Image (cartoon, rainbow, N blue to C red; front, side, top):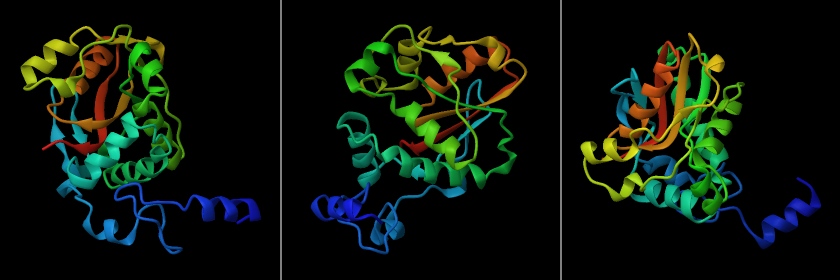
Length: 216
């Protein structure tokens, strides 16, 4: 570690991305307590979906995980993507039958991205792909903004809200391929289903999904 880095760590000590405790010297990205208590899912949280084969999720969207992701999405904690990517990549490695050809993500609209300053799912996909010695590419765009899915209750309302919101970026990138679609949170699966439907209609052979956390 350089002298400059040591000074930075002294002035702004690194904190656990989940509980915000200052990390000990032997901690790596998150603290030892969170290592023991994080709400990991059983069997990678694998659930089948509509239009996509299934979605895997390493964490439940509760408690410290929920607070951490909210900071990541709404309070500028974009650096969390590196840690999240490591966790999600490990979940993907534990499911070798996933068999993807292309890694991509569920995009934000340009308006939402401008307000937030970054696309959190894109950063997560890029970090995850890097951990997997791969790259993530843009396969979908979201030309128009819609009401936030978190404001709506029930699969039917969420499906209606997101219907027609996504378009293919470049059909040649996904034709005949299995797309691994990454998002930060999955709840009803409506957004992933809509994206998968668009990808399949443009020539993708299959769609499988991975999200950092699964809503209860």
